[in-house]
Amino acid sequence: MRGRGTTFTIAADQDVAVKELILGLRDWRPFRLEDGTETDREVAETVHLMQKTEEAFRLIVLRWKSKQRDLFNTEEYRYHAIATDLECTAEEAVWEYHDRGQMENIIKELKIGIGMESLPSGDFGANSFWFSIGVQVYNTVVLQKILLLPESYKTKTIQTLRWSLVEIAGKIIKHGRRLWLLLATTVDKYRVYVEMRKRCMALT
Image (cartoon, rainbow, N blue to C red; front, side):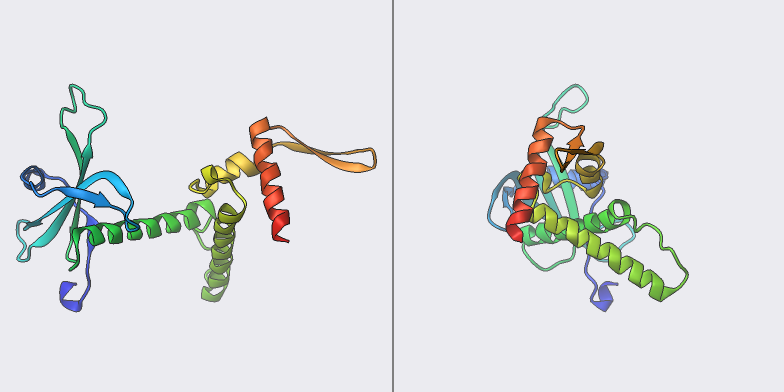
């Protein structure tokens, strides 16, 4: 794969050899997000050569203070190791790793949140049309998160949004020549609906 110009950035198993390398690292520095935001993590790197392999690769490690130390977890730090052959800074490699992880989350949302786990037909054209509809639905949900929903809902999954905002018991009644929608929900949730409606009307 590497001979064909393919690169890799994957999570590394923390076996005995990798753990020894991690504990031997000394050149830790603060890790920042791509936009410069400070984090509670530090980053360092080394080179690792696995058994029965001919080429070494970069091992980039993030560490952060362990918040819960007890009899079974006495280590001061928690670690996450990333194996890569990218030619860039350690920070850039971590950003790339996180970006790829985000794409996996999007695929998971399409499969589980939108129901794209299985295709309805043996015909490629029909399946392509079906999947394109699913992608459009996903994009619509993302747009709703950005434009209509409060900040606390922007990171929630489609399943969570469906459970908390859509699958709510309600009843439509007619009273005083007007239609009323009665919702079996809390006052806080009702305020979310009202705010969504205001934002939606402001777009028209």
